[in-house]
Length: 130
Image 1 (cartoon, rainbow, N blue to C red):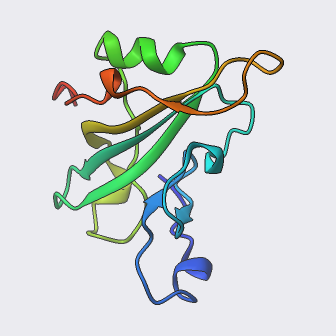
Image 2 (cartoon, one colour):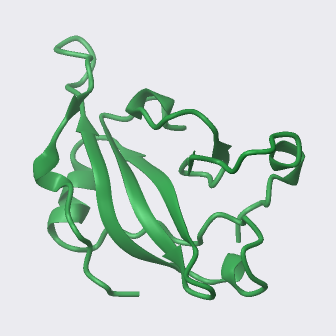
């Protein structure tokens, strides 16, 4: 179960645009350099939904070394608990339903090329496993 971050959400009248890997609300447009894991070489913006009420969220996942791309390709990518946006009583205590990879970004390891590049080939519907 994730923190509800009411101290942040109550001070900003608009809803978050997306949530990071730690389910922290983010209010800027998504960009891979805003991922929580600063050493990431991959970042994805996912669309998930709450198992309890079906509310949808855009969330970020990031990783190093091809792990994220591999999980997308083999159908095992899973965000986990949805953000605790207090959408329903049970939602924050349940797993999410992963729907799709909306954006996928990658960059080469430091020293080779450090600019993020979008890879549309990994922007796919996700299998309904959970």
